[in-house]
Length: 389
Ligand code: PLP
Image 1 (tube, rainbow, N blue to C red):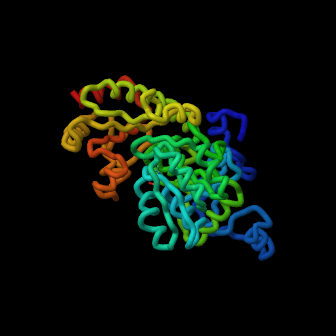
Image 2: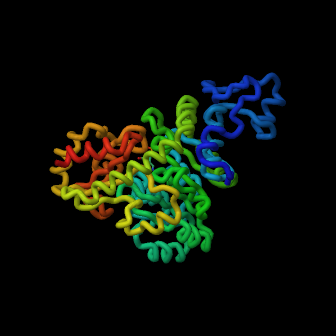
Image 3: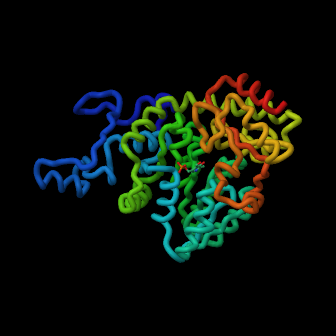
């Protein structure tokens, strides 16, 4: 891991200045196939003996810069990019797993990820044991029975549960399992799972990395050997990031540290305000001392992130009235953006799940996911006060 701070690393990206054009900004290379003057030089690039690009489904200069920037922020050897976060997640699982193998994961992973463990992987005779996120002893015991891949998310979406990543990665390493961590909620500014023992770190770049609600993307960071296996699957199945989105994501990375610091502060201020509000049953935010895994979070995170959720008294009926009254929050299915975004899990992360599945995952129907932006925290609090009054 580089010794430079995150803001420095975000604006001085690896090999950023183009050696031919000398541009400081990474150009958007809108180009499908790359031409060569003779067959020998073309073949040397195609066989990875010389650097270069052949075809943008495989690699593209703008996307390569984005991958290098993300590997730099996560402190890993390599990274490969995808069209969306779900493309990154499904490609990782399908690239690394084979029939007869076993996955251990948690009940609180992102809704579409969870459905991979219950609906997609079992079709390929891959056994998936999805355990209670809070039962770390149970997770360790399941891993120790022997497994091939451990899939984690911390903090989780939308109930902000926190896992002791070092402890679970160590258990996985003892049985030779690959550990994959979705670090979307924390961002590399707040947490680096690779430094806690994770083999692969995944982001939905659509969220905090983008931050401006204008690009989709995904990325997988890790050792060159593992990333190459995931890349190979992407190369064959085709869910490549497009260069224009890569450019938008690169531009956003430059302010990632600034934005995330403001979002950490805003979320903590809002969480503390809501915690004492009479209309709220419970606030879920790892930065609160009342959070059951607050100490673990404080040990492995540099900041607690920009997403919190809260359970409103009166359930779905109450949130139906309250959410449209908010003036400084869009009702939408995204998070990690410069403007605050709000929504119930039943319309966002867990829209694909039944009410019973949400209840089993401990998601009350009155839960609201509140993903702060970079607004002034006083304005967010005043807005919540008037909407809840
Ligand atoms: N992982 C987490 C934690 C998410 O919140 C999301 C989307 O909300 C995803 C993955 C999927 O990302 P995308 O929407 O970019 O496919």
